[in-house]
Image (cartoon, rainbow, N blue to C red; front, top):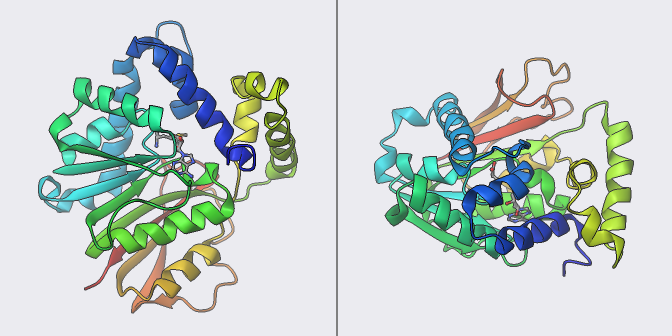
Length: 290
Ligand SMILES: C[S@@+](CC[C@H](N)C(=O)[O-])C[C@H]1O[C@@H](n2cnc3c(N)ncnc32)[C@H](O)[C@@H]1O
C-alpha cells in the first residue's frame, strides 16, 4: 500500500524513527519538525506540547467552542501524530479519540498524553487504509483535524471529510483544515510530485524521506477545493445549522467564487477571515442540525 500511496511514506519513515528512540525528547528532536516545523538540539517534548496547547486554545476560541461545555463532549482528532495538540484536547474535552494512519505515532501520542494531558480521557483509532475512520455513525460530538488533510491524496482527504460527517452526532461540530492553491504552487506542485516519485525508489527513497527540505516539498500531496468539500456535505444529506469557511485576510479570491448553490442542508455558507491562519490554508467549521 505504501509504495502505491507515496504521500504516506514520510509518516511511515518518521514513525520508524519515533520507534527507535525510548526518550520522548529525543523523538521530538528527530521527528518533531514533521509536526510543527521546529528543529534544534535543545527541543523538548514539553516545548512541543506547548506549541500545540497555544494552537488548540486559539482555534477552539475562534471556532466558538468556548461557549460549549466541552468537558461533557467527545472529540475525534484526525491526524493526531505524536500528540502535539492531543494533550491539550484531553484537558478541554471529556473524551478524545486520537486517529492517525501511523500506529507508532499513536503509541507515542499515548505517552505524550500520559505526561502532559489527561490519559484516562484518551482513546486511539488507527486509520489503517488512510481514508476510513473505525468509529460508528453518530458517535462523537466534534471532529478536529489540523495540517493533515493536505498530506493525504485528494480522494483520501474528501473521504475523511465524508467520514467526519458520518461519525459526528446531530448537533456535532466538524472543524477541518485544508490547503488551497497559492501562486507558489506553480513551483511547489511539480517539485512535490517529483519528490514523491523519488520516495518510491528503493535505495534513495527511505533516505530522502528523512530529509526535511525535500519532505516539506513532497508531503503536501493535495489542494482541496471548497466546491468539492461542499459537495461532500451536500451529498451527506445532513441538516446543517451553520457552515463557515475561514481563510487568511490576505486571500483576495473568495473561497466561494464560482459556487452558485450557497445553501446546504438548510444553512447558508459564510466566509470569514482568520488572521492566524496560514496563507495557504482554509478551514471548514460546520455545525450540524438535528
Ligand atoms: C503534519 S502532521 C500534523 C499532526 C498534528 N495535527 C499536529 O498538528 O501536530 C500530519 C499527521 O497526519 C497523519 N496522516 C497523514 N495522512 C493521514 C491519513 N490519510 N489518515 C490519517 N492520518 C494521516 C500523519 O501520520 C501525521 O501524524
